[in-house]
Length: 315
Image 1: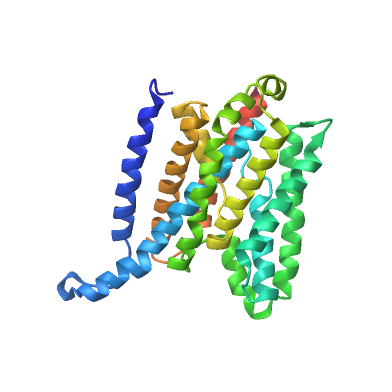
Image 2: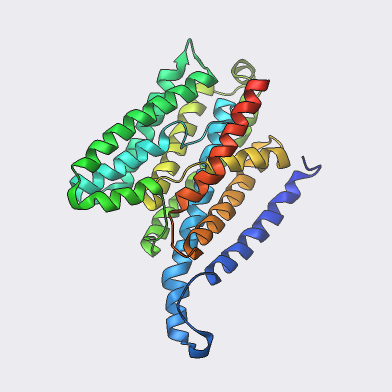
């Protein structure tokens, strides 16, 4: 852990700016330097790549912030919007909007699906006022499987919308334009609310009884943080589909570097999540055949999750 973790924030901010510029310039265009066309280049950079890069930034920082809040809330490094079923609920809501409403109210239904699944997992896991870690993870897996079954049924009857639903399931930014970026601006606004509760998260890390004695309304804080995290996940899913493990990997890595103080951990995770997802999407679109970015994050995140699981069982 760094001796002065606050210094990590300007470094990450600089990396974020450099990454935005670099990833906007990197990609397959089919244009030649010898036949340079300024108008075509401007259209490529500002109408195709820049909204896609900014979309990855907003979704990446949102998923990392939601993961950081959930890990702090549940005091568990394995809590993540993807693992505990929040993303699956958002995807189901988005799929419902696509098939039955022609895409109308997709962000609203994604938010409702994400919130409902999170609350369901939380209520199932809660026993005598406590949420056991193992019960939380198993409940999340069970709810995800149930939602996946409902999603499969919607796909079965979706007809011509099947391809669009597949996009949400695998996650990607190839259909992200400026209106999606405008919608995504709600994510940093919601992250500000999470940051306001960073001190409460620090206190709750000591334990619920200690937090109550120190003046924190734990039940109210849990509901607000779950609601905001679900809102962020729902917006992220409505923009880019199900992208897993960003909220798992980034907060855990940043915690080892910056420490457990959420006043630093939260903004550090947001910037690191944006950087990781930006470069993952750049890698996905510069391969000989473009693949969904969710495949790349799954390749990174699944081994990391197994590592955390094995490390936990050794304790």
